[in-house]
Amino acid sequence: MGSVNFSVLIRKVNMKSSTQSHFFAHLARMKLIQRWPLMRNIHSENVQEHSLQVAMVAHALALIKNRFYNGDVDPYRIATIAMFHDVSEVLTGDLPNPVKYFNNAIKNEYKKIEKAAEEKLVAMAPEEFREDYAQLIDHKYHSDEEAFLVKAADVICAYLKTLEELSAGNQEFKLAKKRLDKTLQDYQSPEISYFMEKYVDSFNLSLDEITQE
Image 1 (cartoon, rainbow, N blue to C red):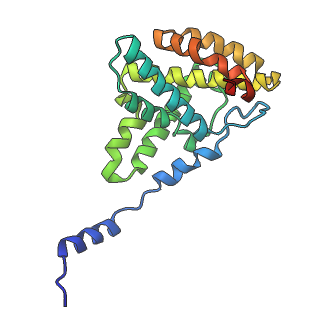
Image 2 (image 1 turned 180 degrees about the vertical axis):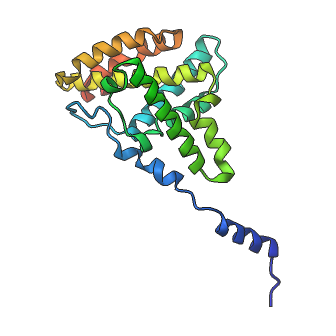
Image 3 (image 1 turned 45 degrees about the vertical axis):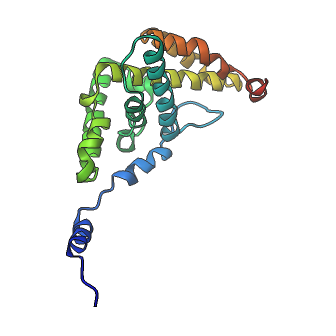
């Protein structure tokens, strides 16, 4: 009869007895939350796909900042923070901007709700990794520079959505584009200007136009 490896056996028992976490099941529901819920969409957009695009743009902004403007930020950390920037919406839903920013009182109260939702999600994370996920989800762990780049990427992606909808003939997004034009003026920095000048015009083009040699 072979010898029993008690250290392996104890580890397996401890793993089975650890508290079950519903954290990842909650995150998986990001794909069920639709953005722009009060507007007609040619292509509906969910929070999960939006978060991936924000991560890509935030990563690019960090690269541009480091390469051309003497930046010293971690593109991979910024991209990961961006992936998690809207996770609280699995608990709160996506409140339309005209409601969320109707006045300062509503805006401030909603921030409190978002904060509470973030804390609840962090508490749901597996205990072994709770601090790791807190670093990504809880804004108090983000530097001003990280928060700026992620928020700028979020605004840029909303702007890109308006361009895509308008290019498809959906005039529902005309005023949203005007509003975001003004919002982007508050996020001026060399890396953002570089991204907007070099890459954004492509979003006005058709598939045939962006695949032409």
